[in-house]
Image 1: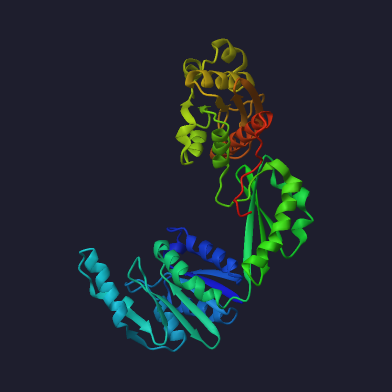
Image 2 (image 1 turned 135 degrees about the vertical axis):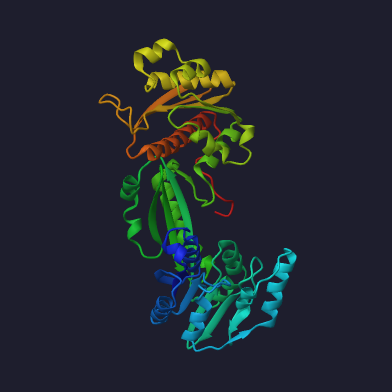
Length: 427
């Protein structure tokens, strides 16, 4: 079955609000096995919205509209759909009661325009809104299904999960199941070369998504049931693991690279510190995203100036004078000094030129050195990143996490406690 998404709201067209609803609904419809070929965003204009609904009815079995169900005059979605289907509107007593209770609980006096939200097209299915005043609506007629959802995500998502998903699931002939394979340490083009033949299959499909410093592969299969779809996906994921190996850090879509690094540190009972220059604390911030990191993370230092590098990371003045702040020698001393100063087993150090100024022929913008010190074994890697200042810094942090993971895996393997990537018990 074919579904079409229509997002309603002039604020979306102006870029005042990011349209996260469309991404959410598209993903959920894909899981349901619904084919989505068109998405559109329409402003608060009756003529254009009417035209868009008519067009969608001509090419889709199911239409999901989000937004435009509010109490103001420019909220037109419900009224437009009612006219398209030649439906009269009536005041639904239960909805009116729910709206009154919503305002009473908050001690707010209700205004007359709010009763507009109690107006329902005749014959429609009403979806209760537990988080707002605008009910959802489903209209079924002539083999077509139209679903109207409120615009605020905190209202739309619970309503979809509670009522709409199961309703649509009964209509969908197939189920789609996806598994995400997350890769670090190799680029998208290299990954594509390794799996080109797998990307040419139609069921399951293997699609790459480039992230900052990572490549994600989404393996998707369609079948009559989720169980059957999982059976189709499983051997392809296993083949990806065989080909790509330890560069796969997880097959769990919820796991991040920083979570994997922290898990490795905890597993090996290692404490760590960070010493950052050009990234200014971004690496520490990524790692602090992980709950429970305090058991491993002892200190984060931002040694931006040469003076700070000397005083807090123990970098020698002679090293700075001879090689410059952006050098493998300084990065190494930062990692050694960081571990010593913070009394940690591991220390990761970053120094570089993020730009747009400060580059030279010998040391161009984007030149980065990352040093990793694990229990006294220090290694430094040189990187050359391109892009603006923000992009260079983001890539640097991703590279530092990747390097930490690699060296922690080596340390773990040397101690006969090997683990290559994270996965759920159900995998």
